[in-house]
Structures are given as structure tokens and as C-alpha cells.
Image (cartoon, rainbow, N blue to C red; front, side, top):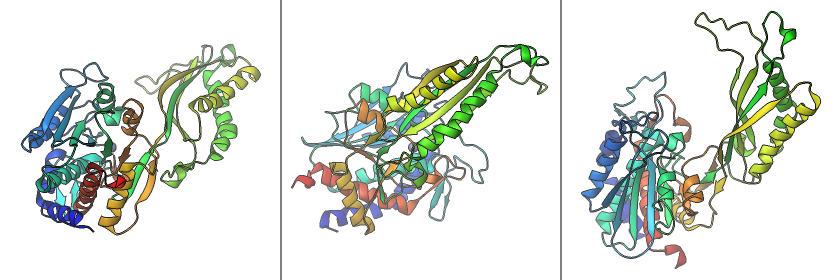
Length: 427
Ligand SMILES: [Zn+2]
């Protein structure tokens, strides 16, 4: 470790207790999304803390975005510390957490510290990462108050529901975008020795098959949409799934099963809904709807992904008597992957090597996160996810984050921050 890295690491080690209490305070604000509760409280908690440390703090309510209302305002906070001209390094964390769910043995909002672990909803995803980045930046500023460039920390809404009232909104306003910002680290829980370069693509669509309603005692008088959907399912089984299994990516996606194209059937609804007695009306189904969740690779075009499904449906229309369908696009995300030679990747990887004494692993997320908006709307490609916490604990009961992981990743973030602000790669 060089001198600066040693100084930063030592300073961060003195902040262990502060890091624990900051993480606990954040978890104790139950920013559940949906509905998007307590965003204002959480944003102001963060803003007030950083204002005391000479940050210029701004709040942005994403009015008119999904879910925004006076009861549940989509409030975002952006704090900036500019000492001199130079590049801007931005740490972005989402402040929302997913619903609690069943099977907890701990109080999900008590933020109990047991041994080295802090338990709670959002501990891992991603209030632990937010706290680690705040401590990293504060330690950095204590040692280098007159740094070149600008350091920003944001707390944003709605990542768990698509990010429209959060990062997407800020990117559209030019705040989370080039040229205001040069480098972005998103402290999502990807494990402290891994750099996440991006994510696969997403296409959600609804397939509806059509039928003709009739009395259930005389099905021959109608035409069942559910039977027609069975034909779609058979096509998926026999043709599409085998095809997807042959599509492998060069992207370093984890876990291994996600290195190929995948398709999940999110839901399937056919016929009448069950009545209060649990008995649906005796009818031949005139509609059956299925929502598919197709995850695709850098090597695939979205148009091809869609046409595979369309061709399958068209062939049924051609060959199956009375088959008719509707296809409706619901949601799409283009795959995103930052180049391994990009400055933020290089600086964070070399900091990981310094702090953990082992080379960083490059990964790509099987899912998606706010990087998509920074990349596509903000036109900013020097962006990664890097943060403490074990990915597989996210959204689980008894979610926790380890204090040592937060300390280690805070050191990595502080050292990488120094390299990025000083353009050390180019020297
Ligand atoms: Zn997250």
C-alpha cells in the first residue's frame, strides 16, 4: 500500500463505531417501496449530515413519476463537495427497500448488531453500501479537504420499482449525467472483491390468447383460450427454451446459470377468477394472459429477442385452428456493460487489490439496476456497481451486512476516489 492508501485505511478504521451507528440510523427509517414511504426523512437525514460537512445539498422531488403523491413524494438528495476545478466522482445509492416478507427472526427495522453483523431490511441492499460510501468520503475529506474536482453523494428513490422517480428522473434533468459527472460508483451489494460492470437486458411482455365464451357444460360450443395457451407453452418448451440454452454470452455474468439467455413465466391467468366460494363460474375461457420475463445478452438484439416470440405465435396462427393472440410490450432495458479499461473499473480494481491483497473479479449482474439510466439517459458510461454485502442476501429474510465488509469496501472506495480525482491512471 502506498502512503495515501495507508492514511485513508487507518482513518476509516477509526470510524468503525460511527459507521455502525450511521448504518443503523438508515435502516431504522423504513423506506419501504412500494409505496415509497419516508423518502423525505431519509433524504433529509443524509442531506443534513452532509451539509454539516460543507456539502452543497439539493433536493429533487420527481413530480409526476409513477407513485409520486403528496403522501408519498419521490424525494431525492444530491450533495456536492467541490474544492477545486477537476473531475466529478459520484456515489449513488438508492434509499428504498423492498417489502419485509415472512420468516424473519429479527425485527426488520431495529438494525440489531449481533457480533459483526447488522440485521435489517435494506442492511445489505443497500443502506450498508450507502453508509460505507459516506464514511469513505468523510474520511477522505478529513485528510484532503482541498482535493481537486468534486465529490458527490446521492440518495435516490424507487430503484426497486424501476428507478423512474429516482436516477432516471435525475438523468433526464441532466443532474445524473455527463458533463456534470465523470465517474459513478453505485455501492450495490456485489461482494467486496467484485466489480460489477453492468447487467443483462430485459424484455417483459404480455401474451394473450383469445377464445370464445360458452357454458362450461358444453365446451364444444366455445373455444378455450386456455387450450390455445397450452399450445404456446408447448412451443416454448419444445422450441424456445432449447434455443435459449444455446445462446451463451462473453459477459462475465454471475451466477453461472445466467450466462445464457433466460425466460421466466412471471404469471399466467386464464378464465374467470374464483368467486368467494373458491368456485369460478362454469365458462369456457375467452382470454388467457401470460407475462414473460426474457433476460437477454449483449450479443443479442432486442428486435431478435422479440421476433423469436412473434415467429412462434405467428406459426401457431398459421397452423392451429382459430388461434389468435395479442402481444403487448411492458418493459425493456438494453444490456449495459462498462469497458474493463474504463477509469472507474481500473481505479476500483487496483484499490481492491491493495486492500484485500487479491485481484478483483469482474462480474455482470443477472438482473438490472440504476446503471441503465445513467448509461442510456445520462450518456455516462464510466459507471460500475461496487459495494459491501453478499448479493444473495438481498431481499431475503434476516438480511444483514457485515461491519468488516463495510470497512473494507469503504477503504476501496476512498482509495479509488483519490485515484479518480487525481487522474492517476493517466500519469
Ligand atoms: Zn439494490
